[in-house]
Length: 135
Image (cartoon, rainbow, N blue to C red; front, side, top):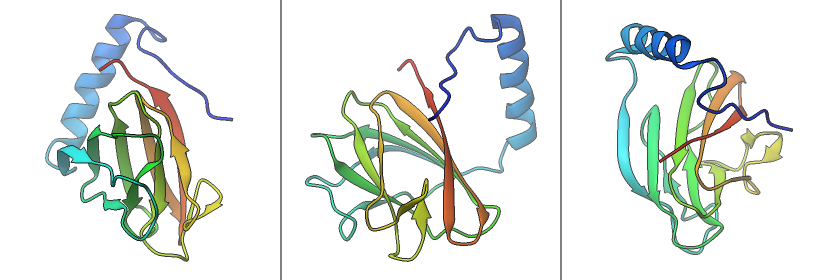
């Protein structure tokens, strides 16, 4: 089961310090793509490819519309914001990788109004950490 951390968990001053530190550490390191649209109707084959390190999906017209993570190579990180109220299905771009322990062709559901950090520490396997967001 995923642990959900919300703003206010650590206090405003600590969270502001963490935000500032992360901004300094990772400035220019991550690529960002905003206003992504999950593929209508879902499915792995036609899923919208997540092109950046940080991806903001702003349109999920119906539950189970889909996106696809890039190939899982060790050390890869992919942060995915689902800014909509609808859940979306997250697949692996290929049929051999796994996502959160599920086959990449099956994928996992990412709830609406959530941000998930997908990380690869073992080749071919995306792990994930779920949090909720206020958007």
